[in-house]
Length: 314
Image (cartoon, rainbow, N blue to C red; front, top):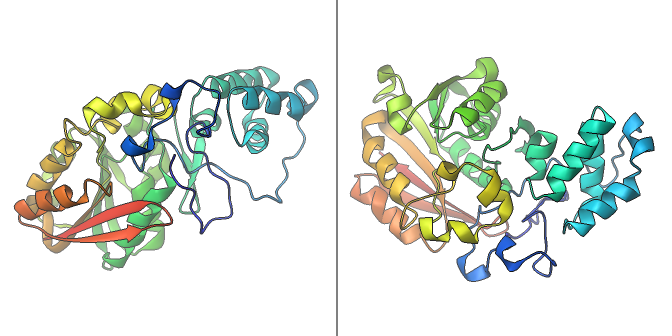
């Protein structure tokens, strides 16, 4: 199970969130030896412990204890908090029942309620779209440090567009482009980024306008890095409810990274940076990939978030 970030007082979901002692079948959890830092959704849309949800018509028809019991029976560790969030998101009793059923069946909470908190922002999350992970906030922090005033930023493999939006909120970005191959992710990113960015659909750099070539200051690439053979070991929230192309990193987990690294030099300006997340066990090979592509790599680690980020400069 991904470790909980110690710097945050808000709760977050791991795998359902289900504990390793959950009565759920073992296939629903990832053994520690093969776990991946971003294998399951972690940045829950979370209220503070002192927050309260205004009563709604749904409250009277489906009391909180009943919802909590249903979620707890499904193996959800933070059943009380999840019940509050689902109640707040539901507009009708029918919608409430459907949302509780989806969550109890293992769909990520963020997809059920339609949003996730990321870098203090509320990010829309549609069904089937990769849920932004709390640990990936560290990638945004690293990107902020190398983002010049008026920067041209590209968010590749953008998913919801969370990285690009968060960096734009934290740094003096001049132009933002985002791209993803998944049509559902592109639609979601367009909602999240609105007028702040141009969102393109296509395969990596093929999606970008040619005029960006050689002009990109910061290239964010949240590439998938789980080896194909280990997809089956992921928690059901990721394995069954997020796009396979957002999870599958090829035979060794580095296939997509190799393609990004091979093209990055043509799109980055001199002094520009490619930033991506990887796992502790893959970092040496990931560094070798970008070094072979002619980039200069440094590694940043946040042990509290269990996050490893590679910065590769042209």
